Image (cartoon, helix red, strand yellow):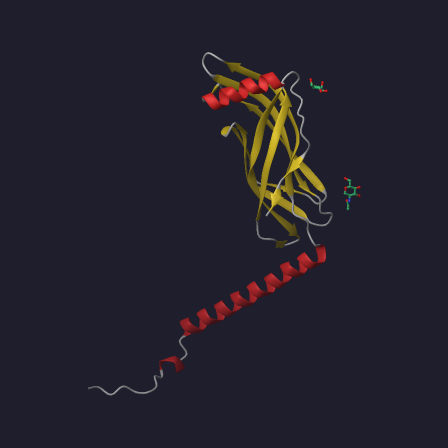
Length: 202
Ligand SMILES: *[C@@H]1O[C@H](CO)[C@@H](O)[C@H](O)[C@H]1NC(C)=O
Ligand SMILES: *[C@@H]1O[C@H](CO)[C@@H](O)[C@H](O)[C@H]1NC(C)=O
């Protein structure tokens, strides 16, 4: 049996690596706490409202369907506005990923590169949606037939984007904002019937 000393003197030696790591960790911890307090204070002072997306306009330029081959082709224009209603806080948007749907089928994807929206302003995203002939299942064919009898056709626009607000050097974390809207058009003239619909941050 070997006798072990009750105390080790290892830790008492000043090991420069251990000290450096300890100091760096302390500095990082303090920096995280200070920036957390700063962002929270900015939040309390400016009370930023969440930036959001809104479907500002839509028009159905052409709708073609083929009974024999059971396909449909769609030409529509969709304008989405990225809104920042804060008068003192800038905003940015990223990961914009929306899709236009007909009868549970995605017929077009609408995306955007990350962009900034200055305080109290908005940015317009114009999307031409021109599909190649879309194969329809029997449910979707029924839906088209019903729509042409009614004179109105329903599409949907769904998706999400990430937003964050910024005051000087202070940035919030990114929030997801979700869009889920119905796009309804008169088939005769392509006018959209619905009202504006905006995204929500949960
Ligand atoms: C924000 O915009 C509205 C109208 O778009 C304007 O009336 C208002 O003065 C603006 N506020 C600031 C702080 O720029
Ligand atoms: C489009 O057609 C609908 C119904 O036929 C009508 O109510 C609407 O006013 C028309 N819109 C335009 C811009 O002509």
